[in-house]
Amino acid sequence: MGVQERLTLEAVSAHTVIATEHLHRYEFAAGLCEGDRVLDLACGSGYGSRILRQRAVAVTAVDNDAATIDMARETIGREADVTFEAADATEYLRSRAVDDFDAIVCFEGIEHLPDPERALDELRRFAEAGAKVIISLPNSRAFDEKNEFHVTNYGFEGAMRAFDRFPDRVVLYQFLAEGSLIRAEAGTRELEARIELESHGEPQYANHFICCANCGDSFAASGRMELTAAPLHNSYVLHLERSVREMWQTNAKLARQKLGVHDSAAATLVTRYEELQHRLEQAEAEVELIKAWYDAPRYHLVDKVRKVLLATGVHGLLKRLLRLGSRLR
Image (cartoon, rainbow, N blue to C red; front, top):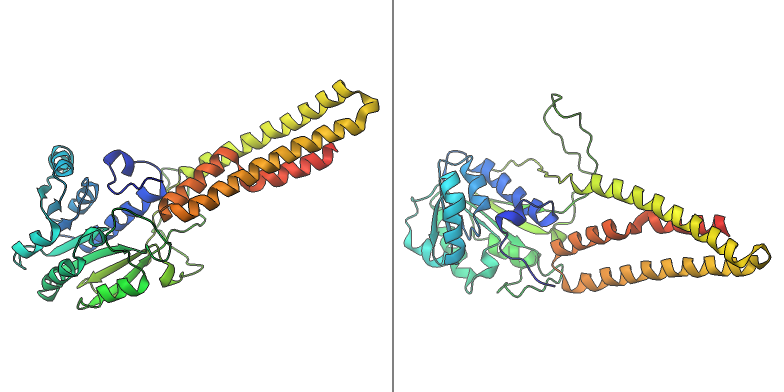
């Protein structure tokens, strides 16, 4: 499966898990960089730089891909007053004085560098001078992620060693999560959101590790939910269930008409054959998911599972099909 390493402005606007988790990190960092001069290192298409600029006094965004930077200048640069520069991340850090920036944000960048230790040491230089440093690393080892663009695959222990060099640090863990949302109708005054954690998750199996140096030592749990998928899924599956129910009834009726009342055994055989066909389709869908587990990055896997569910209505639908088949028999 292909790996999407640079989220385009179009991709980050889509209702996907990968878009949600990337936006969430930048929104979280923006809250820590209020009024700061911020460096967005490994900025990609610049969508995160735009988010940072909403709270920062100035944002300089750096990426090594010149074409991506040119596009970012023409889009985000004009719209959000962000300065974009094409440069190698490590060399850029080495060329700047420690008082040039109040904060440095580097999300999903270190693992791409040929010498991550040099880049981390340069970031430590800024942190030791008092700058805020906020970096994230993907938990590639825990999920056995195969990514041709990653030079270093970090796991829990490797990430903690990388973070150990930073003074006054706090390590946070980003998880992909499911939950329930209760809210009022649009336009109704809503109070401040509250997150109730049923489980804090295992740090070793977080999707991403986030290190915050010189950002204080008090952090509230933060969530970002994508609501588009659930309503679409609910209405689609309900419609699909009704359609399947009608199909079963029609098939059973046609079978009885064609084979006759006295050939009820044959009609039952046809019905059971159709049931086996549905079970086979379910098994094939599960095989596809299992195959995806071994070769897909974690966020692509979650999106693939969701797409399969939307397309097939697997969960709950199979049980309903079996119950309907039993009644028809």
